Length: 352
Ligand SMILES: *Cc1c(COP(=O)(O)O)cnc(C)c1O
Ligand code: SF4
Image (cartoon, rainbow, N blue to C red; front, side, top):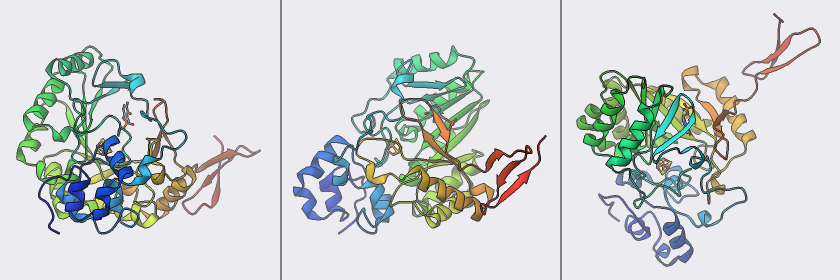
């Protein structure tokens, strides 16, 4: 099989790329999954696949499977409740000091566990010019908005000219101190991070951050690291967001390798997300207890630079809460608190 040079967008493309068996062409259940949830895998990620989804952490994240046809109890079309906090099209305003700005619903790849899987896709709507102006006017009219998180979809899929337009418009709103982009492009389609994109991210007044979605150390190929280096060399602080996923990174070893590699690439691990209750994703879910045990084990093993905050987005739009295991115990009769160290040994801390 030869690897294609373009993004695979359906089952036939994936069979032609050699990552799905030819029997997949006749699999009606798989065809239903691919119709319900968008499929895209870039050549970079196709080239990284080294086995079927139940054995390979890259294939598992991007190849459609029949397991997605099962909607488990409690799974939701809008698991983190964006719709409940969307005052105008393209804006989600849940916390007073920051908003999400979603200019488009297209991504370079479609992750099989995506929390917005029922909104993203090639047919997904983008904001037209007047809708974008209305979203920017909403931000401009609210001085309490300190930060704008540009997400989607993946905002790095926009042409650099359009990115520059959004950065420039936000830069002119004096109360917006921070513009944060969330993207998967550096790992999924590293070639897009070129001089034009880097230049488009330059603001004259506001501070621009870039948050990169990355779940496994193998996503950090030399091309991906080169893309991150271009962003870091341009002076952009880099953060990561990872999703804790069964069969992808649900081991101490996988998370350790991921966070060490991110820090080495100048990306500060920011969030480790507990998987959201998106429809058809139960095969990716781990329990909160498993997640906390992993986070506790990492605390004892890794530099503080390699410790993201483990968070859950509460279903229904109630926001993110840390799921960090408790290190501070209750007070005893003498007012001392029990504090647990990284090896889980208790210590008494005096009152006062
Ligand atoms: C996740 C999220 C944010 C960003 O939260 P941080 O904790 O600042 O990273 C902001 N708004 C909404 C609606 C979100 O879902
Ligand atoms: S890149 Fe993000 S928004 Fe796009 S499919 Fe993956 S998880 Fe969803």
